[in-house]
Image (cartoon, rainbow, N blue to C red; front, top):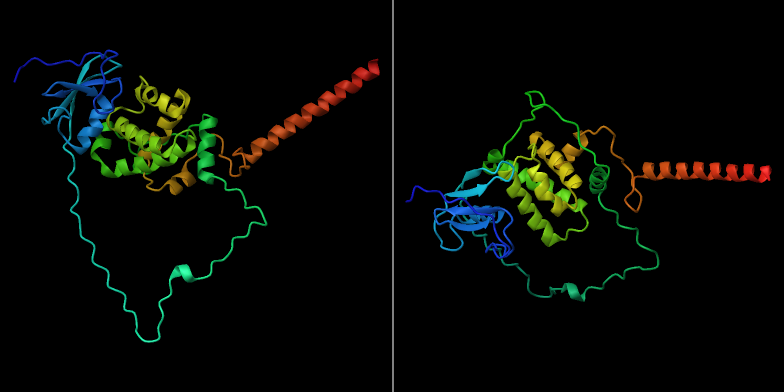
Length: 298
């Protein structure tokens, strides 16, 4: 094996990742075969199979360039976890039908109850938790910080801890799936891709890094860098916490301004709409008073 190291070069417009079939944006090199791929695509591939997609060689390490520092980084690939053994389901017992005068009734023969359309159905509103999360992003809010200590049971984590902690990954997926419902432009297929993309970022990039690398990588997916900043802050706070259910987290988390509890059919907080109405009414009253004063002067 040669002692010289191969540094991944910047891709040209013709370079494409054979995994996602798109231009390579974050180049990396699989070692020791030196085939080039997109960094996150190769990480997702190696989580399932630790071999090169092109030559089928074993890939124990990955080389890539850190965009913030410009230094070459050697990433050690963890072997994929084996699938749990499958258990064959027990065969169901055959139904014991009595003979004689008994009659087996098909569900299709039963009379169906007509659905009444004489009155309109009530509008289906999104879950209150989704509306509150959407309000957090629209208002650029961030939950209050809690220190890591024995009483709070909050603990800091690193990308390496996320990559090796299955429970932390499960909590991250649960949080990400709900947060992606905030962004209405994402369909179900894109949500699953974005989920795996974010999970790969959690395993390799520090969310609170000074360079803001995670926010830059999520800005296009979430619509803006402002939304990406709120997302990184919120998921970092949740993963540091000891809570394993989103309902418990929602009941505990605090913001500088309390989150609204009532929304109208358009998803706007009732308090906010009422305050806007009061402002408009006050402006109308001031405008009418100004018109009366002008008429008196004439």
